[in-house]
Length: 417
Image (cartoon, rainbow, N blue to C red; front, top):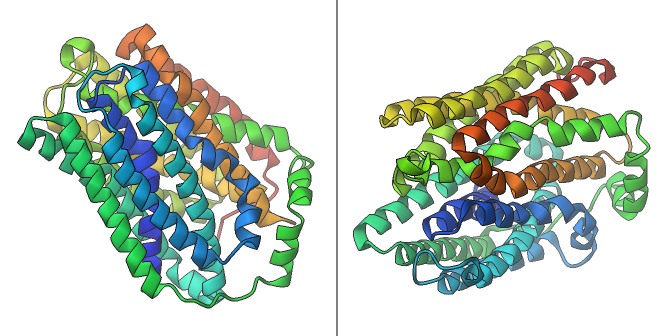
């Protein structure tokens, strides 16, 4: 009863913080350079969360952390609604209160992730963990559709109804706060109060976090692995913060000029569905041929479909179906190609301290998105959308370069049946 809602609750604040914030600030008139830099920094808590994950393990219960973080995020999103500027086009300084609350919400969301994943392992035995893994993934995807799609579409419809962009986003954020409040109340009743004790080896791993940290950097090929984690997704990392502005900016500014609601449908529904299908097929393909053989087709699948944005920047299609097809093609390729990235992190984390090493890999994964995104807006404003997407295509060289060195380091057909 609680697994679906827990992972839905894990996804909603993440997508509000890292995806919906981009659309909202763009609609409120923030320039692209500031938009990309300031929202990229919101990834920071996910980069550094391994540093305080031991605290969540030793202070209070996972159930307490889950309920406390959900209650705090409920308050934050209500406060965020009240902190927004009441006019479009205000200077960046007018967004400082909202940005501060977003950063606090990001810290709370990252902490909630730690507690939720830990609670899942403690409240369920091994059999039920395996039984419900598909359910948790499905409801996290549903949260993705809801966060990137439904919430943005609702905001767009409210913009049209009231003719007032700030008012529309205030109501949208208050609605999101109400949703989190209902989830918090539900989990107060539904989450089991008893958690199983950590297994002895897991307890030992938590106590020796410093040892886990040091052994990670002594692993053979660690610097090549870090380079792969940082650069494999470089085209997507550079472009992702500019895709929503590209869709929303008027045609005479180089964008596509679609509405807020339409952008929510493009990425939050069509894009997420294509991403999910690509990920499922990627998993089936990797299970059939193994990680080593799947790396090259997946790397090319992730990098090369970025060309659709260069096409759209040049052609500026007005037909929505063309935009949907292009985004679906890119997101399918990204979902298929991202499978290799996740499998490689699992492969590299094998051995002693597997859980802690995987947490460090996910920190580098978050960093790979944060750093390029920080500069994306400035680059786009300097180069224009066409020049920017040419640069994104050049970044595909980085994906191909790091992929060339990885297969020889994989000692067995990881992931193959």
